[in-house]
Image 1: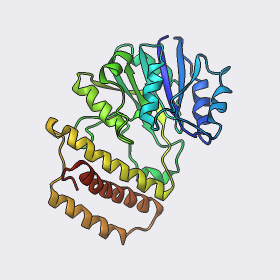
Image 2: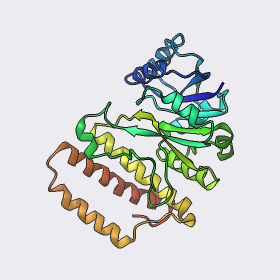
Image 3: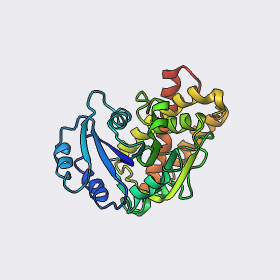
Image 4: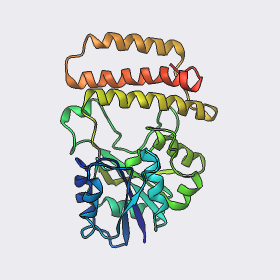
Length: 284
């Protein structure tokens, strides 16, 4: 087995068919497997997965319901992997044609790789005004090291085990933490532009706010962990200025894209305050 693709899921009935169809159409002349790690679905997702056994070679469904969270499910999937290389994707996205082959070939020579992200297929055009992923590879993230999104990471099994897997205590930014730990351990992050992942953004306003809020909390947790390694944080006077700018922006919101962008920034700011209180560190 050359590659183990890990797909965590939780009540993904509405989206997982798109991802499974994309994986069923992958072509690669090397043996690979798909491990779906179910985090406790109650909506019939496991039955949908089982229906693809004849279409996806070496498909396995494993139980990852002992602890809630995508990070835990990814770790369980990796524990069941038979290959020396791992590639992670998500149940609400869609891998592009040739993704498995591109990731598998890249992992033959690189210990840590990341896919290219595209918003074009699964989102309305206005979403690009809110989220602007890099199409030229990972860049410095949060003023620190580059980071890879968990829905497009590839890594050697030995490196994954060395890191101890994803940190399940971080609800959202465990992929950034994972990326930074890998690089601090000596693994260079290699960009694979041929391995495209079509990312599905959240469209509901309240869900977007709460997602950004949790991101803000996790960013403070990362700052507490990595400030000794050089991760910066904005000076408190700048932070207060950002709050003022945020309030002024609200009066100029004229479109759904502008409102969503405002909610994202507001969510971050609220999360920073919560994180500061939770982790006993000033990062507002």
